[in-house]
View 1 (cartoon, one colour):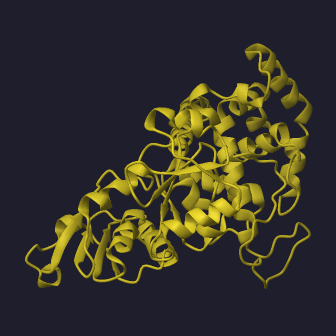
View 2: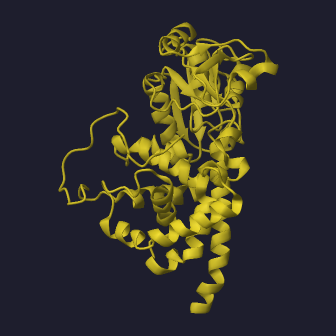
View 3: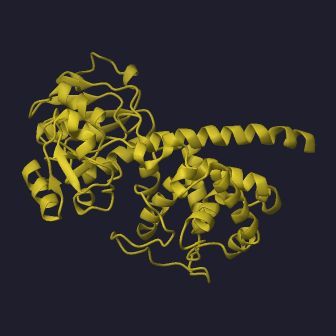
Length: 377
């Protein structure tokens, strides 16, 4: 995903109304743009959710800013190793005390975005503090460019974090809202080429960001797009007709094969893609018990499954292992899905790699800072 700092609106509901508006455009109680994004980085460090759930699925972020913050977070995580080197060399963190996360985000915009620092909804004092070091930051980045012989910005990124290393993008057709034929027709009318390569030809045909797609060779309700395809703002995703779900995450429901009118159970259900997949296969007939111990993640499940138009889910914030197997409430359960290692994505994809790399980098920075803190005491 590319990010230019401009923050265009990609549909959605109008901004919230009401409240006093400051000169920065912020309403009373709203956080400045970079502080809001910094809070998301902090939540990622604590592994409270995925990038998508904490941005696109975050009701505390204005609809018009969700895509912008999502793109900013992704690009900052991608360039975090080089941005950290630049900031450390200039000692900006110590001089301005803006906070490591905010500085990474602002350095990304200042050094790598064609639009520079964002002004709308941003804190002018933070922008001014960062701008005082713009020349020295750019000098250090240019020094690193020469050191690694970078021909472009992508050359500054470690190989395992580059866009070209991405996996295919998988999309599940939600049969509760649409069907495979209608979805294929929709993409065809948008100019996508529907291809039918063999397994050996996949990487040659579905090249990065090519406007092509294919039906998955194994799962009949899954489509495959090239690496770099971004459908978060697509109308079919917004309306719930398609679910962005990795292939490995789509397999469990196909293994279970719940039948229409039956009763099923998802033992570790949140954030809900596998649960909604079972409901889709059941045609919204019967019942699905969805268990998760984490109330925050369970709330995410409720939102995602509502969007997918699931009508037969009973969500329970509880430990599945503590259930009484003789409880008559569950006597009719015929199918059970258990994926205890579920991370919400199905497999370790590029977003997981970005987050893991950033967390490791943050922990290293904390270890370096500890002796200085102890010494100050």
